[in-house]
Length: 189
Image (cartoon, rainbow, N blue to C red; front, side, top):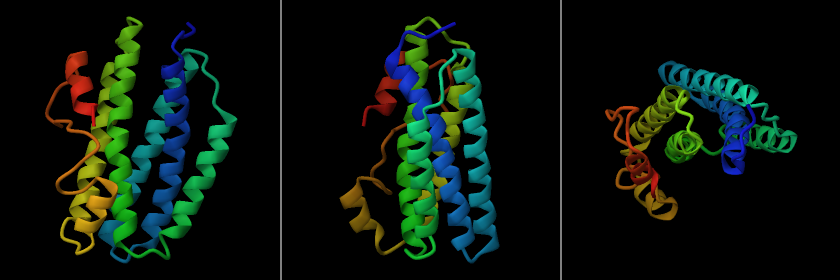
């Protein structure tokens, strides 16, 4: 079945490539950390990103959506640059920017649910919902790692993410049966 929904197709292609960029960035992030417990947690997040990439590819294949070569190259380079930067920008910034990124990623999967539902397709709801909640877990972890940092108040004002602001207001305890209005409200930031 081919999808007639350009925004959904674009979202899937972007998510597929961006998940690889995130995973590559987390490889560098983990290697830059001193504490083994932190390295292992970031590696776990990296594995989640590879899993998300596999799931998104399976959905794309089901609807014969091609992988975007341009996005693959673009996000590969971005991932490599971020991975390298983690070794020189200190401990705070990799955690902060990872948290801000994950905060926005939560909604990409919830918006995909909306797009699929607009086509009368609900069979991917649970998977997309779980991936969105996993991204929320990542956001919460990264925020925990920087919540007491002296730089956080300034970065929060400049980049609109931190203890008092987020790119979503998703309740991790809500269920996949959320209405489209509730999904929109949770991601309308």
